[in-house]
Image 1: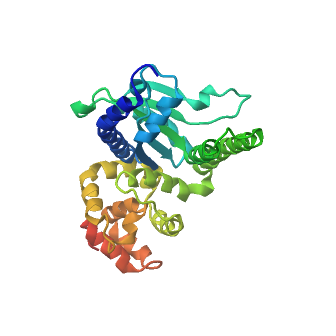
Image 2: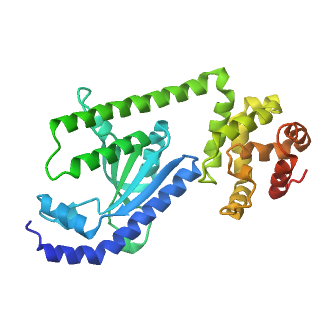
Image 3: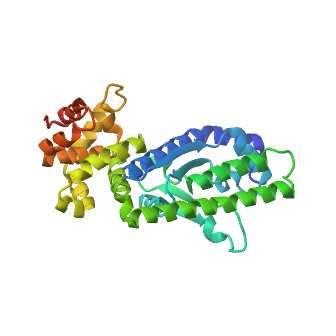
Length: 319
């Protein structure tokens, strides 16, 4: 290591580490807002490399300038809940940050080889505090299955004092094959849901989720959705049914500020109407504006009327 002594490197990183923590926090915060605004459901977490971990990496690598060459001092991980959202998330990263490097681990693996899957970006802020200008943050984008495999492989491969045996390595590669199968089958099931007439409610729920997650990070209860949606679809007028996605989009766009205030008001409120935290609430609010009396008529045959009434009062459309 020609750059400086280990103690000089330690002091330099201690002095600069707070900047990388601020950088990672901002990149994660920006990404959470971006995916939320586009209705993408995913987990965004960040970490900053500890001083000891940084020094160990510097000692292991053949660096001329370890402080500059170690790029993962700040890191953000985005774990997509649905494999088909990976491309949208990657595009958001490209559009919102300065991308210095990009590596698609999927593309770099030969068809004859099994290996780690996921994409890595090295990014800088395109807009941000001047003290963070030029600093790099690693952004990893993975599916949930890929993330589980990577965490397990990291634990099994790096915890021992010596490299894992061929038997352990083979087990890990068998698992990565299962990851590919898992994500492929999830996408196949999703396409079936989108194309099969028997999955109409699930298709509508998928549309509603995209808009719901713009305002709420809390996942809905799918079993409850399966009971509420048939009530709502029963009273959909033909025009709304045929133009469902565009109708929901117009409603959300028209009520963007109102919906934001609505969710800000009840976030963290244990006494809030539980339907607020269900994706189908978007359709309920739309129906309250279109035809509250018909909605009330079919609702009270299945659910307590006070549940709908309190939601209507909260939205400012009492029934």
